[in-house]
Length: 77
Picture 1: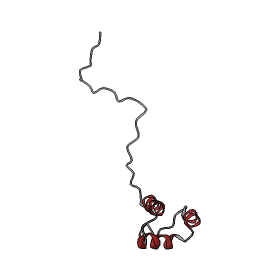
Picture 2: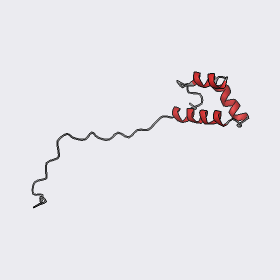
Picture 3: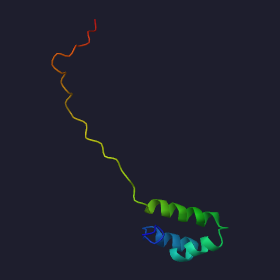
Picture 4: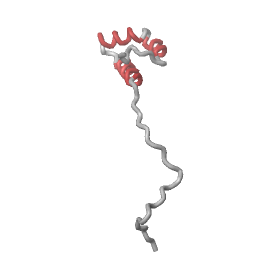
């Protein structure tokens, strides 16, 4: 599904600010790209509608890992 077709929680605010539904705003921006604020708002809306990929890391252990058997220990005087 295109990000322009996905509903957003801010669609009502965009419609109120620019005076037209979001679908009409996309058409207006495509026909006459002379309104920089509208173009930026729609770009931001599209970016935020994209699925965000997150990387999950394994949780850090609370206890330190014990040294391996036979491993040389660092000596500090």
